[in-house]
Length: 249
Ligand code: G
Ligand code: G
Ligand code: MN
Ligand code: NA
Image 1 (cartoon, rainbow, N blue to C red):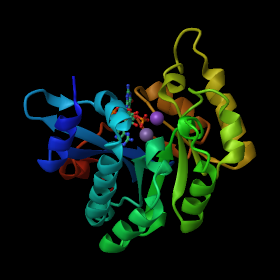
Image 2 (image 1 turned 60 degrees about the vertical axis):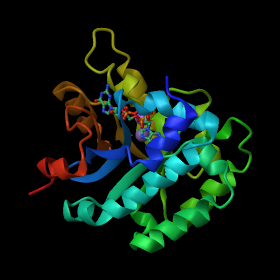
Image 3 (image 1 turned 90 degrees about the horizontal axis):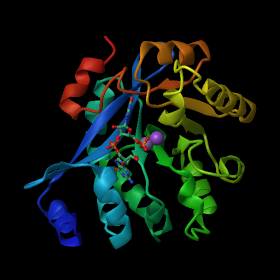
C-alpha cells in the first residue's frame, strides 16, 4: 500500500513522470494529447494513478501533485508544439478546484513558460459537483473565460450527467471507454454512443471518443464524425521522446 510519506518522497525525489497519449482528428492527425501521470516507485516499480490518486486526494497531496503535473505540461509545451500538437489535456481532481488560489497558480505557471490557456484542456469528471464543491460552477466559468477548454471526462459513466452539461461551461464530452467498447460486440449497446453523440450535437459540444481498441470501433465512430479519437488502437500513452512516432509528417 501507498502511504503519505511515500508520496511526499516521490515529489521530493522526482519519481513522477508524464506520459502522453495521442488523440487524432478527423484527418487522422495527432493535434492533441492527454497527459497521464506515472509514478516510478523505487521498490514497487510503476504504480498506477488509479492506485495512488485516491490516496493523494484523501491526504490533500493531490494539490502539490497536480501543480507538478501542470508545470511539467507547461515545461513540455514547446516540444509538443514542435510535434504538431495544438492542445494538451490535463486531468483535474475535484479537490484541486476547491483550493483557493487555484487559478492564480495556473496563471503564474502559464506566464513562467509562456503558455496560453487556449493550449490547455482541463478534464474534469462528473463528481466535481459532489463533495460540496459549491463554487465549482463559478470556478469553471472563470477558467472557461480565461480561455481554457473544459472537457467532461468519462461521460455517461456517472449519474445525472445531463445536469452537469446544463450547469457547467462544458466544451467537450469524452465518451467513456465502456461505451466505445460496446461497439462491435454481439448485442453491444452501441445505441448509447449514438445517443451521446445526438445530445452533444444538440448542445453544440465537441465529442472525443476514448478507449478505441479496434478498427471496427474506429470505423463506427468516424462514420458518425467525432471531433477526436483516442485509444490503444491509435496510440498508447508514451514518454514525450517517443511521441514522434505519432507526429504528422
Ligand atoms: O493512465 P491510467 O489509465 O493508468 O489512469 C488511471 C486514472 O488516473 C484515470 O482515471 C486518469 O484520469 C487518472 N489520472 C491520470 N493522470 C492524472 C493526473 O495527472 N491527475 C489526475 N487527477 N488524475 C490522473
Ligand atoms: O479517466 P481517464 O479517461 O483520464 O483515463 C485515461 C486512462 O485510460 C489512461 O490511463 C489510459 O491508459 C487509459 N486508456 C487509454 N486508451 C485506452 C484504451 O484504448 N483501452 C483501455 N482499456 N484503456 C485506455
Ligand atoms: Mn482523462
Ligand atoms: Na476518461
